[in-house]
Image (cartoon, rainbow, N blue to C red; front, side, top):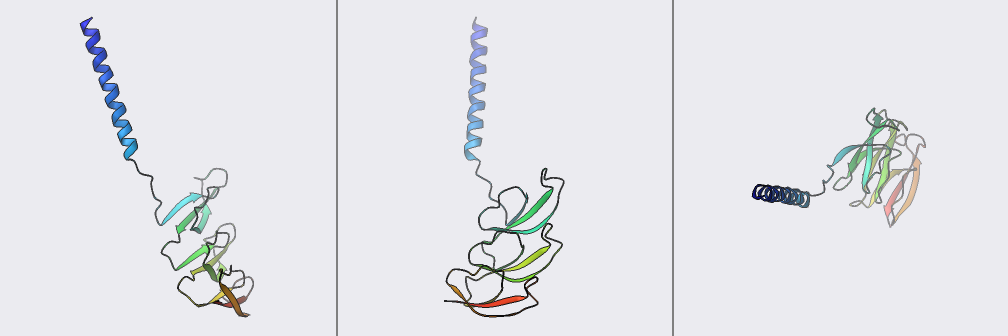
Amino acid sequence: MKTLRTRTSHVLTVVLMLLGVTTAATAQAAPQRLAASTTICSNSPIPAGWVVTSSYSSWGCPGTGVSYTITDTAGQTNLTICSFSPKPAGWVVTSSYSSSNCAGSGVAYGFHNVANDTNVGVCSMSPIPAGWVVTSSYSSSNCYGSGVAYSIRKA
């Protein structure tokens, strides 16, 4: 009897210790922050403030067969993005061109954050940020597709 009671006590102690170690390890694990750029499958949601900087065929993405390289716009001023990428507020399209780095659309945009600007030239397909107005339009070979650009300024 004494042997069974001792063994039960030891087994119970080991189980409780393992539970404590597992709980402590779980409590200390912090959520992993994404790097400045990362790769996701095209059917994954794109986090707010992130843009698609390239897309390509990938066997690693079942269902779609397409991967995206996404980049955080925080701290950035200029980026090249795919035309189908989400466009965060306060960013404009300053150029557009044919690109093999954007599987699916074949078009990339030169993308610019206007936070520190007062005047900018943008392609006609660009979103116009809140508080900005179009002051003129003109022909531009930098704007693939439309060939039209706008001068905009902060109102």
